[in-house]
Amino acid sequence: MSALSGLFGDIYKNKKILITGHTGFKGNWLSAWLYKLGANVVGLSLPPSTNPNHFDLLNLPIETHFCDIREGEKVKKLIESIAPEIVFHLAAQPLVLTSYEDPIGTYETNIMGTLHVLEGCRKTKSVQAILNITSDKCYENKEWIYPYREVDPMGGHDPYSSSKGCSELITSSYRKSFFHSTSVKLASARAGNVIGGGDWAPYRIIPDIIRSWQEKKVLSIRSPKSTRPWQHVLTPLYGYLLLGEQLLKSHQHSSQFSYDQGWNFGPYLEANVSVEELAQLILKSFPDLQIEWGSVSAHHEATLLNLDSSMATKFLGFSPVWNFKTTVEKTTEWYKAYFDKKDILTFKQIEEFSQNICLNLK
Image (tube, rainbow, N blue to C red; front, side):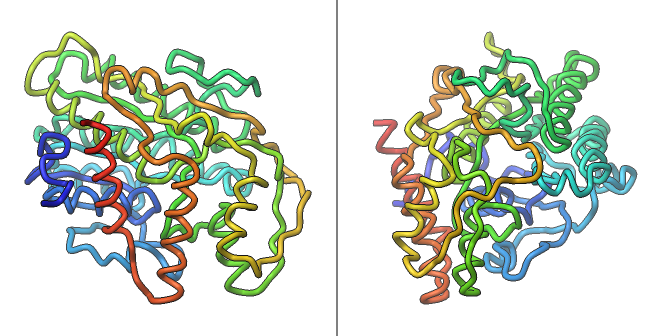
């Protein structure tokens, strides 16, 4: 029997679920996992921007609407016509360096886009729960060693980070202004740097390594001493699905605990390592890759950032499941299988991750 059977109390089975940004890295993996859980998944997103891309490789038989979330009226009409029961909002401009190149587009997408999605949900009677996916960079980063907790202030130095802080404030405002007197549950989720197979986005360490290896070019690593909380893409998705489960249950039955708030989903502490350490581990699978160390980004990027996920552990039963070593192994395994055999290991790894969840629950 598949480890997926009974996972999350089968709450997603046959549910109409809207994922915005389903052609993106995390959106692809979330769509695949929910599809395997028996959900009726509908996607709303821009077309994939890279070739190859995980969306086309998976070729999931799900309903897809290509739309820019900055088009407010179109987004609202689409959400009403789709009539989802739960919405996972992942559509965003997700890159720090791109936010320096296009700050206006970043703010329009991450702020106005979020407003358009929330307005569409507010006008759609079928919606029971909404989860806005933001980022660990939404916090006012003081570059200290202490992990950030959900009660710490929002902030952000660069346009991307501040746009995510704004998205969190908008979510809180809508919860208090429009959903407090309804049964609709609205929460937000913050996660650190995710890695895994199927990512070809620019300005990200794993895709940059893969591209340089393919093209036999020297890879220049910027800010190699910067530390990040690395986690496999399935780790935060597990947190999102746990939270979504409780939001749906809270919609149906009143709960003493308020699940409709902001949540952190971070890795084990040992996964907080430098960009250089991560690259050195990846090099073991791609030994002929040449790396140039020591280049520093011309723009400000956080050098230290960590999340406290203890609230999610206590109230949701969340754990990272895969440690840092396994995370790197599964990531390199995915790319090696793709380039060596054209195998797509996405569903295999979702099953493996689900098996590990079941073992942890025993």
